Length: 143
Image (cartoon, rainbow, N blue to C red; front, side):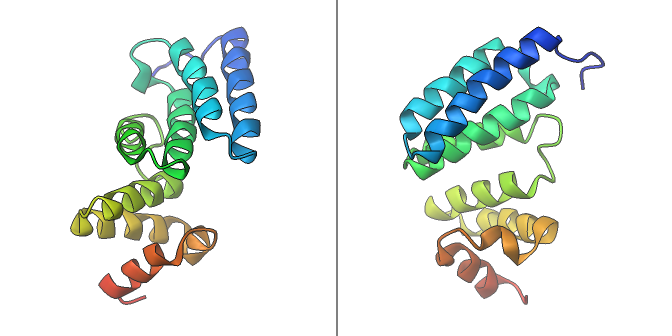
């Protein structure tokens, strides 16, 4: 983990791109949102997985990719996010990774990731998601 923080100016610039991305994602304009998140991503210094900003940028990229059907890109962003500060143990990241893995037919790994999401945030995290993900988890675990 980086002992330094991003400069205030750089943090604000990154946050600005992400805010625009979030607004576009809220309008379901996912490809445009991803473009904004990618601009933020490019500003993160190397090594990128040293910075907390990388975790939330990748979460936003993965979410927009997942919601727009770019499952491979979503999986890649989520897997990289797990190497960033706070990635492992983040219920949202585990849920999205579990969903992508399940959609790709990797049921055992999907069950593990979905259970991590459930253990971290409870059933509530699944409430706005397609029921098939929580139903799958229930079929694998005693909840």
